[in-house]
Length: 425
Image 1 (cartoon, rainbow, N blue to C red):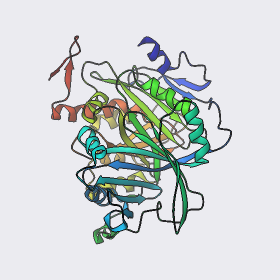
Image 2 (image 1 turned 90 degrees about the horizontal axis):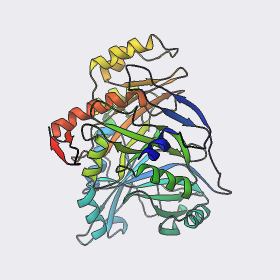
Image 3 (image 1 turned 30 degrees about the vertical axis):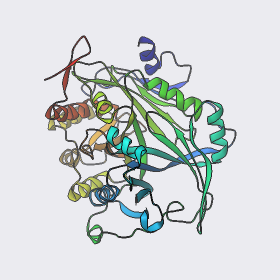
Image 4 (image 1 turned 90 degrees about the vertical axis):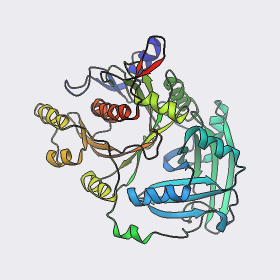
């Protein structure tokens, strides 16, 4: 454990790093945050361009897609189901800006793979797809390094062109699809057709103003974060972009450790979290228990106008986490001693419960939804960046405390006893 803590904090890393900073008093407890500049090796050919889409396996794809359209401002993009010749799985793709989510469900009672996944995990992210160049080369290199290939490179084709795809296994039951879209002109992927129906209500609702996927966070059980990070470094040639240790990311009750991995161009960023020992069960441990293992905790969606976005999403009925007014009182006090200038009105940010994290060079604004299904697993984030490439470390304490209030309401803020058992508070 001591060795892994050292790895997280960067003490045993040979990577060069840009800075090691100790956070401001009153925001989070003292701890070490590391930003790395060594990108490691670059693929001789091929590259990861961006997040292509995320696929959710859910109990009712039609209703899940409708929820994201009505509550979050997405629009129907494409459909694959019985009417298009897909006899086993139905998929509804929705889009907002450059963000594409696909919701898939089994059509037949005999689909054991999807059925077992749903019983174990509930609704959740099954696949994180990357847009790539030279799919075959990237897959071959990953295979040589030991990655498990679920589906070999193959071509899907329709009248709009060809797409080259492959699927790799990553943490837990989650997969990565590599998508090479050379010249493809269709709506989404071969096999998908235009939506059968678009809700007329959507045109009357305010825009969500969400632009692209900023990052995707994966939760791991205790002691599994570093092996997962090393999997990305070894098999995909991702590198450590940012990390923070459990001394910083803690409240009185719970703590976590986090390492962010990124592709060489740093257009794909994936924080990997694990719980750390605290007085109570952390929300990371709660996620792992309710999801049945490692999985995607949340997806952060970037906006260029978070105030309008959150006003609109709240009007549409999206439910967000909230923080007490004391957070903003402390924020105003801390900003008096900072070089950064927040352009947005702090009164408006307080009204909307938008969080602020900053250093002397810039700041970010962020807010988190409540879980988007009954299990306390997947939730969403809206983020706006102003010359700040962090992940809200200064807000983790406030977020933890807000989540802990919900955990208490669910009866899951349990006491950790010395023998490893838990007792409900």
